[in-house]
Length: 163
Length: 126
Image 1 (cartoon, rainbow over the protein chains, first blue to last red):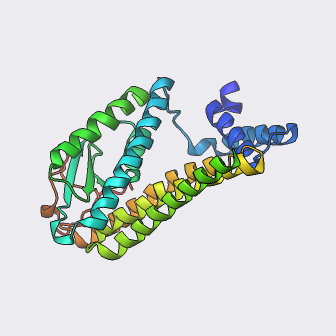
Image 2: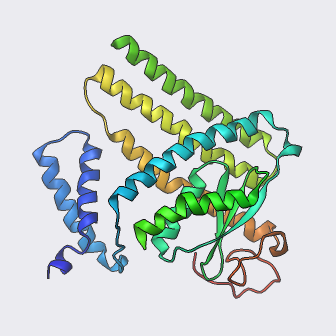
């Protein structure tokens, strides 16, 4: 019964918080209305969310976000240097295949988005059965190193969060 | 206090402007579609991110209140930007890239959106 009325408790909390952030000021009115939205929206859209992804290890989520933000800053500067100071003939772009240990679609989505957000790499495609991710790298002298970086920095942490 | 605030806001705004400019410059300078795709992902992460940080700082120092709109903008942007980049990459792969130019999709047989050897019965999941 409870599961039917509140199919996704975390989504309910998230929607309430997002509503409060949209209002940009705290008041009892907006809290009640946010909670109302948080209860109604998951209930109405429940058929579109069959699974309930389990997140473990909240400490690791915080660590992951910090690592990604740091990598975005570092990689931005690096790509800016490539764009500004390296002639086009010297840019060595690579296609890189990253074999995946992650199985859950949510986890793979987060990994692919992370790869795209960090400048210098764009995730382009998934293999037919979803065991391998195709990544385009703007410039690297060591494509295997880029692949290992992705696996050790991001995938290892996501495995601990999702699987 | 006000002076320090001004400096922080100016630094954040300048950084945002520089990264936005370099992103646009990359769009002009780089010479193939996949390389060009790297430029806008940069402008939208650190470029827009810095401008939003400037906005948060401005509200905190001179508006006298905490503003959290910017965090939402950043979250929405970070969730949507990779999707559009991925679509562009897939369209490019599908139309212009041959399977033999790519690394093998081990352990699977092929990439989902690469249109080589002309068979039309590719997988339907996106």
